[in-house]
Length: 253
Image 1: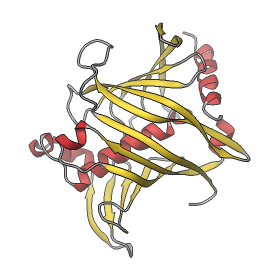
Image 2 (image 1 turned 120 degrees about the vertical axis):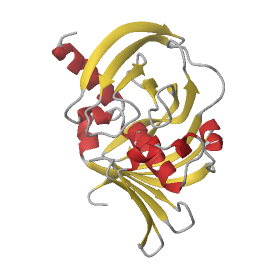
Image 3 (image 1 turned 45 degrees about the horizontal axis):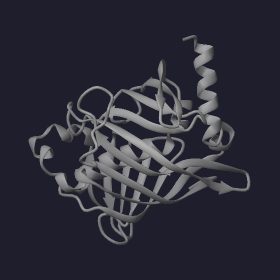
Image 4 (image 1 turned 180 degrees about the vertical axis):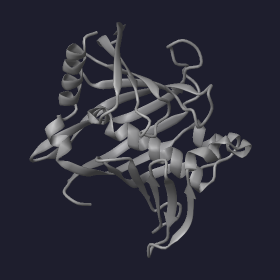
């Protein structure tokens, strides 16, 4: 499809979720959500209940508050570093080039606090800044044939991510409904394994913000295995994310 036509589709998608002008005026998102699922159990990590987090809207940075202990925080800084700080800001643990650590055999069975900080940081950041992440340079897109969904026609957009954005896999497929809202994204969680193909379903949209603009985002997300083709299995639920609140932040944070 012509680049001009693809740009028009992307513009409509961005507008449906709040608009580029509103997004570019933000510095971050203050989030409260719960996260659980089979992946947590399989990797020996406790679920998160109404946890507070912060996502940068200007680059790959993410913070888990009260992680892994009350008053502490975990910081994800792209593919460069993850670190855990105590209540007064002393670094208690850190790992550089954290993605490389997933090559070890132990990560097939159990994740430590820094492993989860990397995976949870990049994954949740990606989820929360999509589709606005497409405003960043370096992406390429392919419009796939539409499919019919339960609520009407679904637009499918294959995106190839630039190498400077940590993500599940370089190529991902994004599904949008007739209102141009994201309803599903398909990817391979490569740090889990090359076999870990999944469909991530997005539902229950709400508006967050207020005067000056609003962000429209899903509050219920469910990740299902998709080992073959493009139809996900209904079991097990790999990850469940339930968003309590998102506060768009302007200015310096």
